[in-house]
Length: 150
Image (cartoon, rainbow, N blue to C red; front, side, top):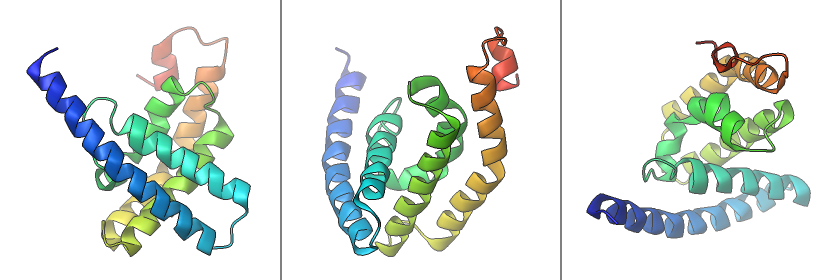
């Protein structure tokens, strides 16, 4: 193993521990909002995947940094990497991200401008992400450049 990879793994482990605490607090925060238990479970699962898989996939990014990475996640990475990706799952993940980063704002881990930017990114990007998902699932499209609009 290279030195850089070992450093990356150590940093990811530190972040995973931090994320576990955040997820526990997020769960309690959601429970206080009187959402249905199934909805709460979905939000926590979506965010767990986002912060512990996507944000740690190529580099060791903390959850607060994820507020800037939603577009790449919803418009590309999730579609390509998650076997359960679908139109409705993209929307579900977008809703979870908005909830999670609202929670992060209340904890003062991000600021209002960052949350507003995330919400605007989701609002503007959703039509294209859904269209990309449809192209990705379309068996008549065989050239991946046509899926991603390259």
